[in-house]
Length: 170
Image 1: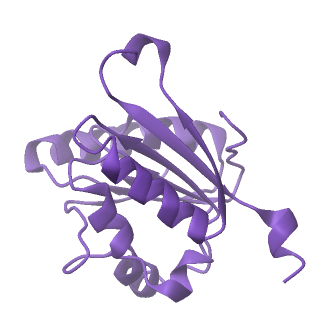
Image 2: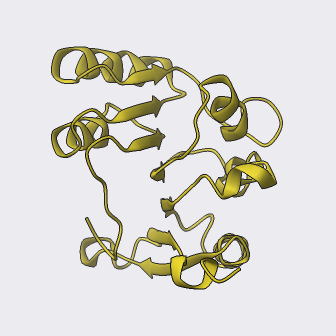
C-alpha cells in the first residue's frame, strides 16, 4: 500500500471511521477471506456503508458506533470478537484519535501489527507529537506523510508498523 504497510489474504482489518466503505471495498478486493470490521458512528453514513458492504462486499462486519477511551473501546471489540491479531488498524474518525488509542489495553497493543491514522489540523501539532510518542513507545516504526493535494490543509497520515527486528531479540 504505502510506507511499508501491507495487507494480505486472510488478514484481520479494522476500519474505524469507515464512512461509506471505500476502504472496506478496496480491502475486500485485495484480501480474500479477510476478517473485516468496519465502524461508522454517523447513522446516515452508516446506512450507505451497510448498503455498499452488502452489495459489493464479502461479508464484512459493520458497526454503527464510534470509539472512545471510556465506553466502546478497541479492546472491548477485540475481546467480544475473540480477535488474536489485527493486521491493520485504520483510523480516519472524527473522534479524538488519542481517545481512540487510549481505549486499547496494554495487553492488546501487541495484537496490532500496523496502524494507518489520519490526523487533521485540530490534532496536528501537540497532539500529533503525543500520538507519535505513544506509538513509538508501543514499538512501532513511523512515517508521517502529507499528500501533495493536501499540502496546506493540515491533514497528515501516520503510517505505523511493528519494529519486528528489535522485538525479536526481547
